[in-house]
Length: 380
Image (cartoon, rainbow, N blue to C red; front, side, top):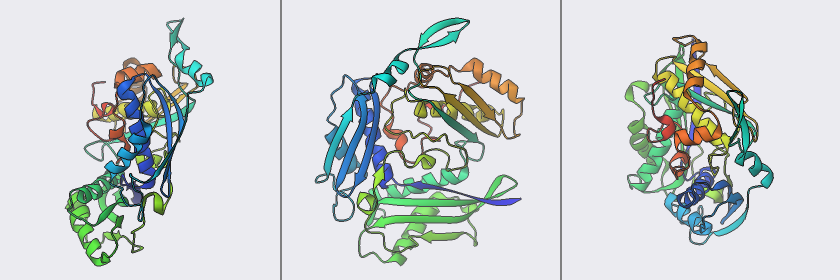
């Protein structure tokens, strides 16, 4: 049976990703000075203005406005007429401390260990999280989102290296993969929309993008004469970033995870410290799912955790290998329960999540990057 599946990614200059990057930059700035900082930081970007809100409880002193401006500069935005200028944009900061009602459940909860009530650190909110892995790519990610991220990252690279010197930071890509009997066999469609300087001929842009981005990323054997290319299909794309569209932290959760190939619990990642299980438990679920595949227990695996606020252990753990398991699923579940501590504190300690690593996660997916702790392969 043949079917098509599509995933998308965005560049670091997309207004939503700009907001994610600012939020994670603020988080890292606090963690550099205070490993126990509680951060839930939201960013809104609009015409000429950045608005920072949320809750931060920390002993550290951080110049948030300077972090914001440095981050916008790093992305490459310096023109208020076409996107946003890090030098002249207005920065508004409205930060409060973590609610004591939430803090009391995070700071102290009780879990049952061998029939004894042991004090632990509870989940910072209720919620459900999914982790996923499959054997379609070397990084054990679905092929559509893997290629979409690589194309988006390449767009930023050719801009920053002046390989295509007329590009601006905003951009989106989309990849449609054709599957036959659940295996990827070819690329059906590639869509690239990229911001550019005024006065560039579309024929030149389309040629440059195909040669320097698409052909540099997608393996030749996956492309054929029937592959369709849509490069800036609407034509002109000069106005971009927060001037072209507003941005908001947490609005690209499908880009952040598995491109729609797997389910998503709904919680966003960026701007949240690791006591927020929306983030930390999703990372742990990916780690376990990846290692189930890496240890050859299955070819595809999806995991769900759910938590209650203030409660340490997950309320439920669910594993589905979609009939691809090489050993009984009950045995896989047993191995997971014996190997891993799934309390928030257990996850934080195991993955070392109090380090300022979060800017590395923001762009081009939170999963599939070999230098992140939840991507390491271990023996189960």
